[in-house]
Every structure is written in C-alpha cells, then in structure tokens.
Length: 348
Image (cartoon, rainbow, N blue to C red; front, side, top):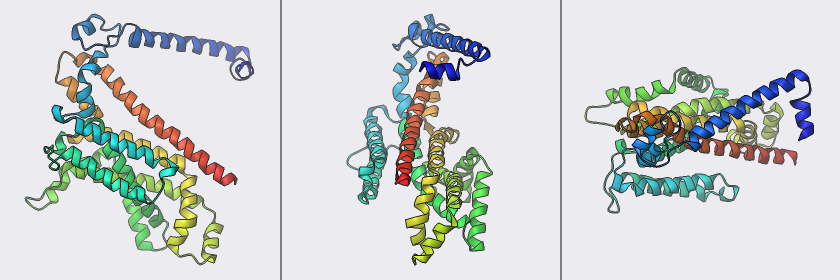
C-alpha cells in the first residue's frame, strides 16, 4: 500500500500537494455529511423534532412516516401484503435466473407461473382477492415489474433487429434500420406520451387497452432498439472465418447463429448489454409523466399531500436513490461476474 501511494499519489511535490488538498476537502465533506445525515439527524416520525433541527440535521422521520406510500404507492393500505409478496416472488425469480444452476429449460415455465401469480396477487379478482386496478399500482412493485418485463421482452426483439439489420435481404435490412433509427431518434418520454395519450385515439370506439400494458409495450420497443445496436456491434466483431467454418459444417442460418455466432457475440458485448439493462431500470422513473406512480412518483405523492413533511423531500429522494443504487450496483457486480466467466471460458 505504501509503495502504491508513493508511486501514484506522492511521486512528486505537485502531486503530493494536490493529494493533500483533495484529501482534506474529501474528509471535510464526509464529516459534514456524517454530522447532517447521522449526528444531528431525526429518525422518528416527529415533524416538530424535524423542524427543530432543520438545516442542521436530516429528517429521516419522513421515511419512517411515509415509507409504505413510497414503497407501494396508492395501493390500498389493507391489501399491501399482496404487492409485498408479489415483489418478493419476482425478485427471487430474478436472483435465481442469474445463477448458473437454474439455467434449465424449466426456468421458462417457472417465469410463466411466477408472472401469473404476480398479476393475480396485484390485480385480484381470483382466489377471493379484491380487484385493484392497475392505475393504483405503484412504488417498488411497479418499478421492478416494468424493468423486468422490459428487459425480458426487449432482449429477443433486439436479437432479431440486430440480425435483421445485418441481413442480406434488402427489405428486412431497411425495415430494421428504419425502426431502430426512428426509435433511437426520439426520447423515451415522447414514446410514453404517444403510447399513453395518442394510441387510444386510433382505437375503435369503446375499445381500450390498459395504460400499464401500453407503457410496457412502449418500454420494450424503446429498450429493444437500443439493445439491438449493442448486439449488432458484437455480431460485427465476430471474425468472418467463424461464419465460413459454420457454413462448412453444414449448419443452417439459424443453427449457425444459435450455436456459434450469437454466443460469441453476446459474450463480447456483455458490458454493453448490462449497461442497457441498468439504463432501462432507471428509465422506469419516467412513467410518472403518464400517471403511473413508481418509486419517484410515489415519493411525490407521499410528500406533496402532507405539508408537514414537504420540506423534507430531499431525505425521501436520498432514500429512493439508495434503493436504485442497490439494484444498479447489484447488476453491475453481476456483469463483472459474467465477464469473468466468459474470460475463463475463452482462456480454456
């Protein structure tokens, strides 16, 4: 450690001075953050106590008071055990899907069953559960649902789009290129607006599609276009000799892609794929603009409706930022693990 510090931070007078200055500033900032966030903080749901330390300490009491609204949104208070159970099931499935020991064909059937149970618990109307409309879904369950289904739906779409853009058939290549460039040329918020407000105008009178379904389709189409370009980069990185060797083995086009080309291409762009997944997870915060209250929307709903806690919205945002960080950091670490597995396979 001393040798590393001497080589990288104290190798000359100028670098030593800069290191000491930046270290002092960082230490001071950490001390002030500790004093505000822990030392003088209020941890109980007491608005008067929070007002007494306002400007000097954090008021985590807003989280203690409003955490159920932040986590579950407008879901009926007495039924919140249902989104809790549904979210735990879906998260357990996501964790299992990341483990090699569960990479079996029956995992697809498990996905179907768990998603069916998730929607039964959330929506109700069966097994004696009361019906809860999708407009009342919110918070963390909605965030995880949108992120998970967006990724699951976007991945096969992206593979087809990437293959189509590299196709020798002009019509397929042009259609895929136009779709990708059109979607990538507009922000996600525009796509959500069109799915939520413009799409119903083209439907026959009396025919409606649930807003959650429209938003989910919009996110799948948007994420698929971006992910397609990542996968296309991986496909173009494969040496031409791999294609020729697959053709020499007598494999069909789809057999070649399945057994030889796609596995190598996807392994090559693993960091880009995981980066896209993380971006999709964070993009779920934009559905608030179409009146679906995920984590950030639920926080606004919880705090704005109570003037006693309105001054402490910053603490609420730090709380949901911590939730986003845990999920995104976990995805990042999983990406590193996948990269190590890929590199180990290449070494052999």
